[in-house]
Length: 326
Image (cartoon, rainbow, N blue to C red):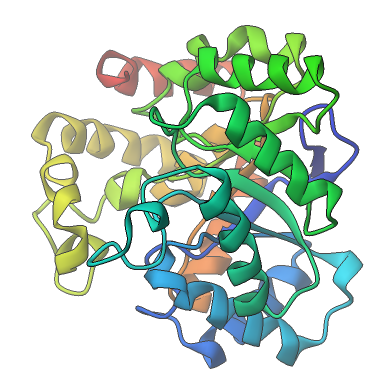
């Protein structure tokens, strides 16, 4: 495993990390989580990604119980969570969902700490921007989490470059803890934010990236070329919103053209797609997901594939998928 600094921060994160979206609680119970986190740690992974909204808090509970069973020294691993949507969108009071106001954030961090069973969380994110709360209020509340020792670093997820810069400038002006990382979607078909919109922020403020969905929710594995297979993420009722993208004919045709390139490298399509993301030096870590140990091991194999992605191979890949990227 190789490690990269989280932007300009001193913290080092593994190039590949393990996320819990969709899988934990829904497909992965505590026993399975113990097995996969142990395997990830054995491979050198040190970052586990989570969010308050994943399975309405139960994902944090599963991960916390697994970590307690493993007994891994706290200094050896990094845990994240994200705040915005709240735990229960149905019937929740107005200040408990879709917000980044001070009251919600104060309760959110305490709830996550309790569910994880941890004294502090390494990375906390504003899961989406909140146009109804002044950025100044959010920045102060996130900075307070760090001052209180409940979190170590804070950042954003799917924010615009302008809002990230505004938050950083407010923190700088008022001597508050600054946002140090952004968590954007980034894969072969989804590139603009990472490669264009955020371009100036890497050098200007030292922004780090913990990217998600390197496989485009499974599209880049090739398993959706013939429709939605039973048992897949796309077949889950809660993931119905993904189906149109997963069955996109043009993108699936491009994935089919990537298969020979992967085969030449002795790689799976998934490994090729994950390896491609790691080739961007602005990416601090690539968050991968897995519902089974075999899937985790396959994902980890992407590190060896990355070493084979020469400029010539990268150009071949771009020729196939570039016209469909946005």
